[in-house]
Image 1 (cartoon, rainbow, N blue to C red):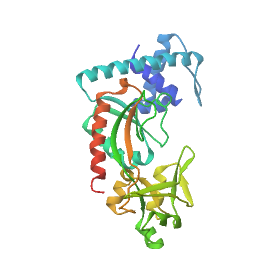
Image 2 (image 1 turned 90 degrees about the horizontal axis):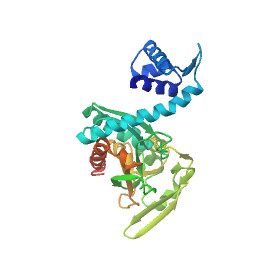
Image 3 (image 1 turned 30 degrees about the vertical axis):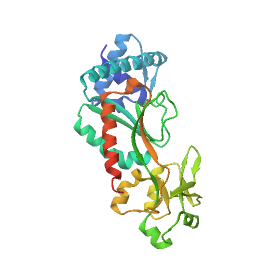
Length: 299
């Protein structure tokens, strides 16, 4: 039984379309249709019910799909094991990254890594909630904060600070705050995670601790939106300096209270188990450590 046909079957079941699966695999719809018919003939089973408007998997197809996924995953694991023995950077990385970090900072780094390793493929998932590694089929996640599950394998990539910031336009209109207490008089842009608003901002200077509960007319569960609002002059934000590194260097935003520090944030590369730690993941870890350090240097 041809593994390419099995992969096509799984892709068609996922997309619900022969045309879409063919396009993703770089073959013609006619070739895809012929491959599925060949597989059905080998199995002596109808896998899909076809009509001019709809493609629906059969009960037999659903049953076979479970075994097919396991078989392909086992083959991929075997291939990755051989690659690991040779130290080869190859295979697929299914990576989950937080929104702002993924869209604006890490994306060009991933492109660079893939250009250097042509046998590597990438499936990128962007969002601020930590993915379910099993339901979302994710191999590795890049996130702020040490994972709570000690059974996971976690590599610390960087430690950075959280800073308050605003655009030059906002500051020209509403004035430059000189002390964290001044934030009470400003429009502050709040970030939500799991329906919890991060509205308590903390700053420390020479033993002086300022904890300010901020207010504002905007909040979002997408960290990238908070940054965009601040760049557009809508208020003051409070985020990781890593997320802000490009905007700070470009002068799109200004760091506030440079003499104050905040609680440091750690960036982690997290795998659900040791078997996901391939040479490709170790390459990714080492690259991220170097890139993150360079991104925040001198800020």
